[in-house]
Length: 358
Image 1 (cartoon, rainbow, N blue to C red):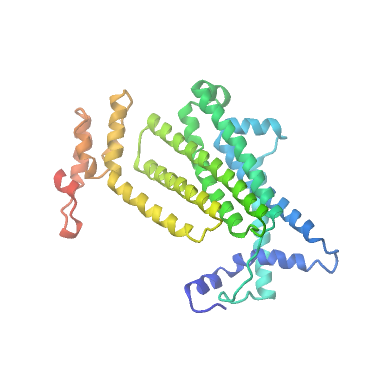
Image 2: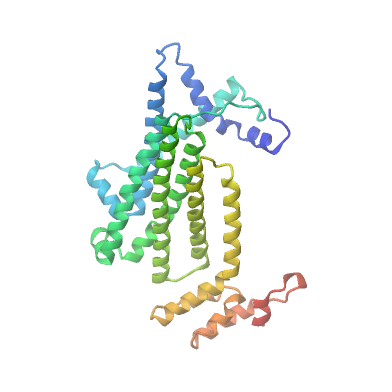
């Protein structure tokens, strides 16, 4: 089908899932003979409502599971529905239906070659502003619930959710991280295809997308705060530090996104995002993650908390300088396995920490 290029090869492999969206439009066109053609405004409004409902079906369960306070507000305002079960079957139905439509479309009208030029789709204001605006209001409500929990402290969280603040913090980190990534996709789509024909269109894009980006930055800060609180309560690990670094990088990407929104130009954004990712990796290497983790856990021990010596003993020789701060016999329990794991290096594998630890 496509030309002999990486893009063409990937398109040919993924033709059915890619053309699932085209297949849905194709099925819609097939109904013209039996249904009166709706006006353009009606179709745009209907598509905006559909996209809004789809976004709510994804983001409401994620936000509810991320925060017990917000979930309580929603449960008081909405009828009792098994949200997880409903979302599961809506997702399955939509996925199977789209895949079936895509397969039929490929069989009935094979997709055009990957190299063929296509006309850029432009979303009218109602098509993007309604779903993005509703999502912005949803995020505003969530951020308000976060502020209530923050100022209420441990007593408020324990009273409303039955959890300690550390348990509450851990419970929503992964959901908030997923929300951050998904929202980035929503903003990119709106910025890329949103209409910019008039001055009003451009200011609507800037205003709504900036508001959503700022609220998402608050969610990023909430996710980082939750993970830091959880680590202070239960200990630091390399994995937790890595996901915190990823979340910090996403925060930087959102700052870049706000700049792209005001310029109404995202052509440079992918290069800038890659550059910040490389900078984050370099900063992580300079930080020396395992040494940092060991120091933080030893600081917790000095403050009266327990320490997971078994975990520290699985780390590399980078932790040995920090281990010297531990009292005996914990120091020996950690230092012994770490030194036992140090092997002879070739000149290509030379490492200062391993050399010092021998």
